[in-house]
Amino acid sequence: MPKRLGFSVYVSHFDEQQAFLTQITGEDVYVFTSLHMSEEVSATYKEAVMSMCHWLKGKGFIVIGDVSRSSLSTFNVSSLEELQKLLQIDYFRLDDGFTQADVATSSLNFVFNASTERLVVDHLKAPICMHNFYPRPETGLDREQFKERNNILKQQGAKLLAFIPGDNKRGPLHLGLPTLEEHRYVPSYVSYLDLVKNEKLDYVFVGDVTLDLKQYQLIREFETTGRIQLPVNLNNKDLYHQSFTIRSDSPKSLLRLEESRQYAKSGPIIEPTATLSRPRGTITMDNKYYLRYSGEIQITRADFVQNHRVNVIGQIADDYLPLLDSIENGDMITFVPSEDLI
Picture (cartoon, rainbow, N blue to C red):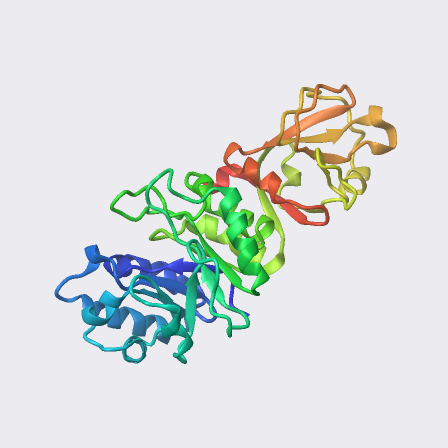
């Protein structure tokens, strides 16, 4: 099965992108490239795109090419079939100038525009639908319309793809390339988990030129193990890199860590310290005054007042507080030092 994280590649930035792409396993990784960005067209454009696409295919990447009618003349071909042979494209995402009739009569593989098309070709059993990314702030999709479009497409059996911002923001605006507007200024890892866990998307693409390697490692940990790493600041350093399970009966207002009470039994008595108020994202440990609950660790998803039986032992890093909305009962988590991500 292809990996869920994909990448955007741009011929104008490909020299710097190759270094990152070489670090990841190409097999079963999707990449997306646009073949009709006017600002990238130059005297050597055709040869540069051919070289890029052939390199990607040689490394085992699955290539999605965004095309319009103008792409045919740019590459001096008369059909998508010719363009496919020239560039070894796996899927075409059709932009201006193509109709559903073009798709219905072709044997090529297509990706539909999830942001603008509500219906896809009837004879396709599992169409792939990719949302747009939005370079201009305030133009990205809002959550409600995103859900509405996705629900319509899911009823048709579609696989859904969308974009998150990365690093080294692509020009000309350099303000991120998300599908959802609310993702524009949040860490890539947070955006990724939101789309995969909350919106149940099949694939997520980095829209920008590069992805920070530390963000990539957080995402890969989730892809390979299902474990969510929480960047936090803890008083008890022994709790870093420990795996915990969210209890299946945790209420909405807080997350209870299943193994924590047993983990604490082998240690000293938990005396009251830092019994402070507990805003959202606070990590706490029950002290000896909660008797048999002593040692239980919790993460607050709402604001709680001070309690002399509960010690504050840490806090989720501010940029990663939205991860609380992506964690479900039964999930596995690991605390990681937030300073390691700087």
